[in-house]
Image (cartoon, rainbow, N blue to C red; front, top):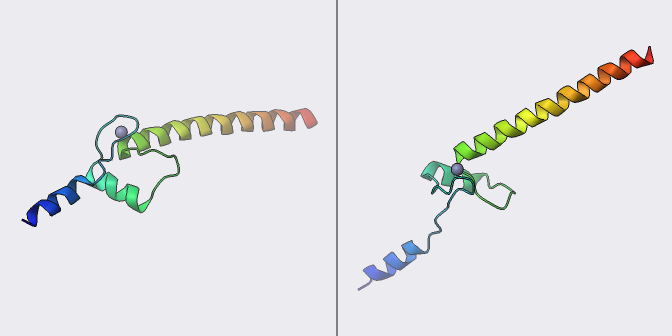
Length: 79
Ligand SMILES: [Zn+2]
């Protein structure tokens, strides 16, 4: 029977699981991961990836805002 060989090939497929929520990735997320592999060393589903991005943007905005405060302060101090 050649049918069995096909089945064993199928089980070789790696089940991708999100690093943050431990949920198996959807086909769309798998597709994205294949197309745009990240350099983090782990896999995230699109919703967790978005959560991390939001966090990153918030902390980035915070650091930029404090940088601007500092710049403003320095400018005033120079005068
Ligand atoms: Zn996730």
